[in-house]
Image (cartoon, rainbow, N blue to C red):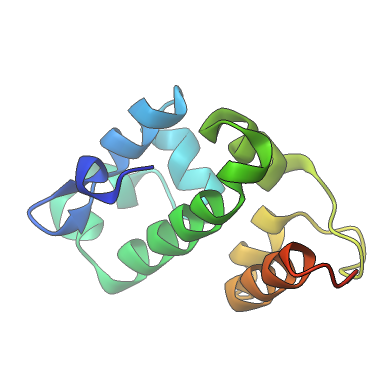
Length: 116
């Protein structure tokens, strides 16, 4: 995903992310571990927590998109594919639990040929 196309005035824009993923902003909120009002109210969209969660999700999707060939397939993987070594949790579940760095490290390890 081109980050410039996903932002408004230097902030991640949930509606633009949703458009890119062919879903709703509410679905984006859920996938990032946010409430619906976090993507609907301007002051909440710009909050540190909302922006951090959106950034973590976008970073993860961008990192795996080349592997899957499309952002939609990367999004499906993020939401539904259990990761080995993480007790059957998906990337989305790990990000929601504050483990985005673990997900990114796992992806880097797999890309480097290390089986996690």
